[in-house]
Length: 284
Image 1: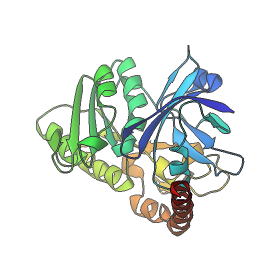
Image 2: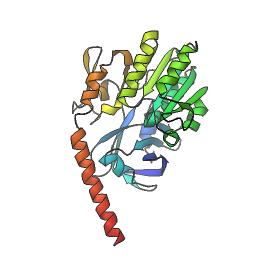
Image 3: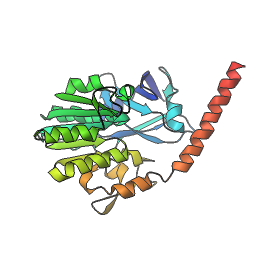
């Protein structure tokens, strides 16, 4: 059992958990993830390790409630316990001193971009972060990014905060200004990562994306995370999750990411009905 040391919402439906997991905290590196099972009957879900504290023996994960299990997880509070936390899994981010490195996070993807931004700064890079959200309240970890990055640019789709527009528009603005950018990391929804790849491709800027949105089991056994990279089949959870963005077949990736959509919606609907029933019974 793994104790939740602290749990708090940091954005609508987005919750940060600090979990006691000393062995994982000691070994984890930027880009790696854990597999969590809330209870004995729960499904296994992969979640990226956003941060860790070796001295306290804790890891941090940030969860957006989008389906049954993530919403169930977000109901847990400080002092609760999680049955299984397995990791660290996946290959760590490739880190070196590229020069000027831009870390881009779309929505909750910022939580995944953050540890790599830290590692890039520690390696001597001049670090820039572009963090996006639909509106101001969905822009997360801005203060944390400012502590490790030389420049931080929040963006919002509606212009309610920071730069008005998608993260790709801000990236293009930086490139067009004549800034020399040597490396770009992008993590977020698949269409956003694809757009970043197409933005940097004409300039030959080395670009890496994390394909964690397609992961299911997280151990390479289920085959649900198959993707095509450089015309070869890879299993994202064991071969990645980070890959050269200019070699990813995003069209196939988008189709595969919808494989379990109907089942996920059915599961979430059943869960929500159960919650609504429990709420009504509590009221009466």
